Structures are given as C-alpha cells and as structure tokens.
Amino acid sequence: MSSIPNPKLYEGTRRIAEWYFNSFYDYSQSGKEHIPRTGPVIFAANHVSFYDPPAIGACLPRQINYFARDTLFKGAFGKALLQIGTIPVARENAEVKSLKAIFKTLKNGGAVAIYPEGTRSPDGQLTEPKAGAGMIACKSKATVIPTRIFGTYEAFGRNHKLPKIGGRIHVAYGQPMNTDEIDPGKSHPERYLEASRRIMARIAALQPPTKNLV
Image (cartoon, rainbow, N blue to C red; front, side, top):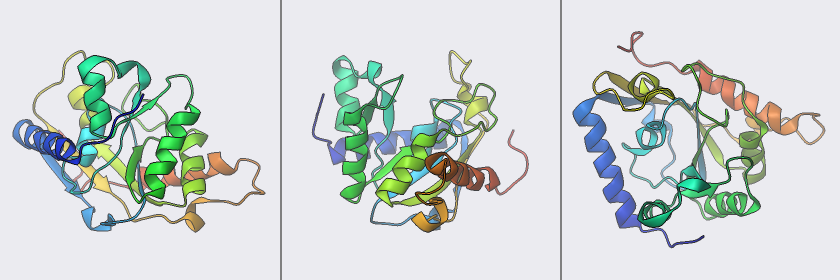
C-alpha cells in the first residue's frame, strides 16, 4: 500500500481543520515557539480522542505524518489518507513496513506524531506508556516535542458516537527533548520503556495557560 504524499492536499486539509476548530471550539495553543522549523521532529502526545491528530497539526505550518490503523485504508478515504502522508499501522502490532515508513520520514527531516500510550485513554486520564515511542525516539535521534492535548476527550471521547460542539480545546507544546535526555543507554534493562516513561513525564508536566477547561 503506497501513494505519493500531496503537500497541497495536506495543506488544504490542515486549513479545513484549523477553520473547523476555530469555528466550533475555543481552540488555542501554547509553546509553538519550541517547535523546530526544519529537521526530524516527533510530536509525542497523550491520546484521548479522534480529534487529537488534527488538533495537533491544525495550527502548524509544517507537515506532520500521522498514524492510523490499517483497516481505515480502504477506497477513496484510504487513498486520501495516504496522500496527506498518513502511515498505516497494524492494530495488533507495528508492522515492519510501518516502522520503515516512520524512520524514512524522520531520516528525510520530516515530522511525525506518535502516542506513547499506544491507544486512546478510556477516561481522558494519562495512562502508562508502551515501549514503542521510546524505541522510535532512541533509534531515530529526532527531536521530541512533548505535546499535551486538553479538551478533546470532552469534545469527542472514546465513548462518544458523535462529537460535542462547543467547549475549549488547548494544545500545549513543551520544551524540545534531545536523545541524551530520553535514552537511558543500551545497558538499561528496560531501555525503550524507560525512554517512553521519560517522554510521558514531560507530557504530564504540561499545563494549559488557565486552570479550567470547560
């Protein structure tokens, strides 16, 4: 399954997402100044909603490659996902092809969004990370931007059949993390899991500018 990404289609999709969030929600961001304009970047975020991928990238000028489970890549919708640079991932495990696509994107100076928790939180709270994000960060040596999303669970959580219009959505981008901060070293018995834990701790520390998200 392959398709050449279309930057114009991605930008058009991003603009639609930006319009949507700004029109129907109190949508804001903080910490955008931490994001490198060029070079390999991993946006490592909490995951609580289908809204999370577009919420992360809607306000950013650079293209982000997202992941989606491989079962979504069917027909015209699946073709569109590929054309905006979405990477298909097997639901049960990350296929070799998927990992190759991720590392190729980062090697070429691109940006990807990953979720250390692996799946959407059932209640909107942060959960324990899995080793995959740490492994990608350690092996790629890409800059990691801890990213925390607030309000998307209330708008379109895992148990919502339809999104709830209105309310506040905020995306906080944290200080960049380099490989030395993330990687505990090859001798560590849980090297990649520990790397994911370090990333997750930085995500947990992020807060919105105001206390209440209603």
